[in-house]
Amino acid sequence: MSFNATIVKFSNVKYGLNSARFLSLNNGYYNGSNTIKTDAAKPYERISDFYAGKSVFITGGTGFLGKVFIERLLSTCTDIGSIYVLIRGKGGMSLEQRLQQMTDVPLFDKLKSLKPKTIKKIIPIEGDVTKPDLAIRTSDEQKLIDNVSIVIHSAATVNFSDTFSDAMKINYEGTKKVVALGKKMKNLESFVYISTAFTNADKLTIDEVVYPRLRKEEEVYSFIDIYGDDAEAKEKFLCGSPNSYTMSKSLCENYLQENRGSMKTIIVRPAIVSPMIGEPLPGWCDSWVAATALFSDVARGLTKVVYGHRNVVCDLIPVDYVTNLTIVAAARGNQSDDILVFNSCSSSSNPITWKRASDLFLEESLKYRKYEMKPRKVQFYMSPFVVKFMTFALQTVPAVFTDVLLRLKGETPKHLKMQKLPVVLRDIISKFTMTSSYIKSDNSLKLIATLDEKDKVLFPCDPRTISWLKYMPVFYRGVQKHLLKSKQ
Image 1 (tube, one colour):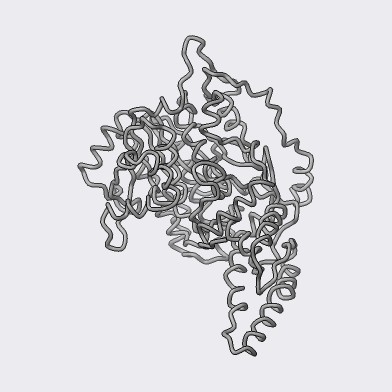
Image 2 (cartoon, helix red, strand yellow):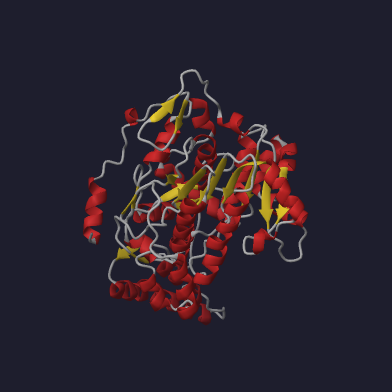
């Protein structure tokens, strides 16, 4: 399908789904079929009641998503048992120091104020997904085997510029080790794997299914041995997958499908994770993920030209929507032996384009700041030649001119140097800004429909409820406050 066909595809899709199709059943659960199963004799079980007295094991707890998983579980599921968090030793810090560092962020301030004792439910487990058997002590492993009911595996490297070898070592091999541990757990009810909505970005329409792998495990390792991280060779080897990160996550999905055994397994695929939209701290973020960095560079006048088209969809999803959907899916999402996939995304139900999102971000920034390098609404071009020419005209030339003025004033030039990293980032994510993927979320919407009104309020995760006009200013202010530490 051509790029123009992609634009036509999106322009013809009716994004507002008919809510009448999705029954809001107080006693329903989603089982992966086209219908919602109900048991009239069974009373509705609230999400918090499901977690009452149960323990959760989380990998990647020190990351952006991981912190929100922990905070949301402790805040919404008051009677939860323990939350075991796999924490890697770092910089000579003790396990307790690492735990304190993890929770010593504004995200946990409200929880500490209202429910200070709940923090004690976090139990650090020293380990490392890159080490044999996760490098977990025997006594800790037995504790997990005896007590854990839900596993949320989110540990991964999300750096698109990581080597293929590192992506496989952390994402793929790490997942194999966590699966092996999960299969030993005596009371396991749900094993949730956090993947990415772009595992199958070689396709324009992505359904909530596990697709056949593009490459076999042995092919990947053979390629790494022969070519290492050779960019040209890797481009051909990826078969349309955007990068080694997405391919490694796709391999993980296939591994789970084939090796999960009797574990009730769920895959949650977030799209482009963005700052928090709701409780406890709208705008909170601690990670320069793709869209966050790009929009910030646009607002600072560092990026004015981007690969793509003004109508390409930017599949944003707030971090709390991802975590809330995951918490709900673990509790209600899998009543069968089939592996279920839930896409946490906005492209198929409430889309916004890269152009519109960046413009809204920029508009909010102009209310607060003045810039040496005046920002402007970003321009999108499909032609590499045009992108390079316009980058030179709109970014390089003004940067050089501004640096000359700084030299004349006896100051150190900086603007040309500041251009380098934004250009690298823009180029790295170009495959996402050039093509719209229509990522379906029927499973997720049906799952959400099984919640009663109280749980829908407590665990908001329906992308159709997002007002981009209201959210993008929250997005901007969150970046300023929590990443750039601005006092505006």
